Image (cartoon, rainbow, N blue to C red):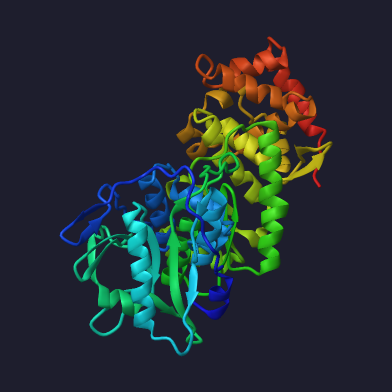
Length: 477
């Protein structure tokens, strides 16, 4: 902890909590402990949120660590939990009087004497049935231990009873008072020292109401894990940006990641949700934006032990990741964004429509506030196949299973599916077709009968001839 963090901690007076649900403390033979105070191991780096949640649970308030993190205002992109000052902010926002959080030590004060007096005050909190959160500095010599939060749960003889959220077996740990006196006065880099204490005095606790789908704590924990993995497995500097439901990671520069996060990911997600998808993917998805071909191939091998089958990028559901060579542009990124949304909203979608819709938007723009697909490089090959009579019927396309679509492609599957979607778009039928197909998926799993109904045609051979004339009239660029 540095001096700036210390100075951010507020020293406030406190009042007795109103509407406090009493919790019974047991005192016998000089021992005092809060029976019923539960222990839970926290995710590494997020021990403060867990301590606060358990303290409030003991006092009758169901406030989760995620609620507390959300109330702190800490950016999930930082990949860490709350500092004492931020934890104080969160608890105050929820309706908890934390008391005097930062009690600085003057140069002429003896730390042990101050800590002993502080413990006397904490015992008073325990006697009132209220657990207390403390932040302990690193131990040394005969008192080893990493710095971090602990939940004071009792005293017994010359020991303090605490729950250590960093350890699975940390319930009712005994710490000699002498060790507490040594570690409680935490030190900053400039030798500033003081006691960090957060009391749990409810004064009208209200559970926060995060935005729908907000998972700030989960994102922060994931970012922390990502950074550890990057440091362990990859070389070079990577930037991490949270853009729910995605986490973008790049070894490009800051301007690159900002451009692709706001100009591609956010833009595409907004429009795809507006026209098609009601729900975000439920799992956290990593978007790896590698700066060039060498980085793309090399880092894909290191991270996933895979060889990319495309020079552009791909969606890997097994690793919950979109893996991109962003030097090739953002078109493939938009294409791959469609797939996790389709999986979350239309899991039974056949490959032809999944890839057709995704391919449509790999070259896209905005018109009238909606995303529109444009003609692209797939057109030339499709026109060549049409002129030679090599494009299958739409019944054949729609009935092509997943494996045949990808592994026995006559060279037209992607393009035929894309330009069928393009035709529907140009006739203002694409959104209608998607939603009708979703509704009809149980009795029309291929989408072929729904396609006929939306087109309003009975002779699909005649429609195919019309569609081919339409495609032959298109151009790119």
